[in-house]
Length: 182
Image (cartoon, helix red, strand yellow):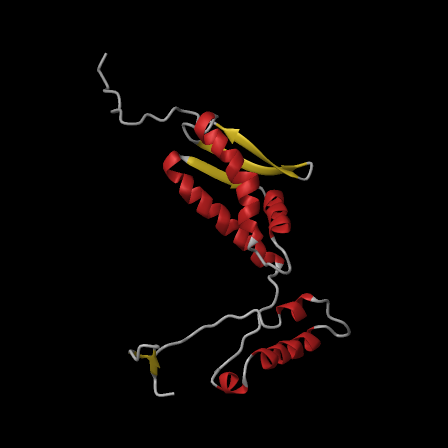
């Protein structure tokens, strides 16, 4: 109330200019159930009812705002797929490996990696299983030991990696050849 936070040892911290963001799964089970009738209006009421059931009036009165999250749209899920692939490509940059993801592969990953209840959390596991594990073998013992391009596509409802070795071998630690006049 006075802009101070006190721990159980009596130590105080200035809390005047703090924005505190708290998350909760209150109402998650209610939101997972299919809505009847006109849909969204009923669910918004369920959000409020779940918060009222879960938290005391004293606590709710101290909240400035409550924001309910909607399921991710297909467009946002595809952006998350791109983010994961860019992170993977950044990890592989020092090995000179570039990843090209086909639109079909991005859609496949979005479909398999998104769950209405869990959101995009399973996406990391899907990418691990279908892209990172096969890539590891190629990086260590296959065509990607000297770098290259990996084209990720879908064939027969499965992810396929087409690996292309670099056109010129990468020379590490060597100096460029000297030009001599003939």
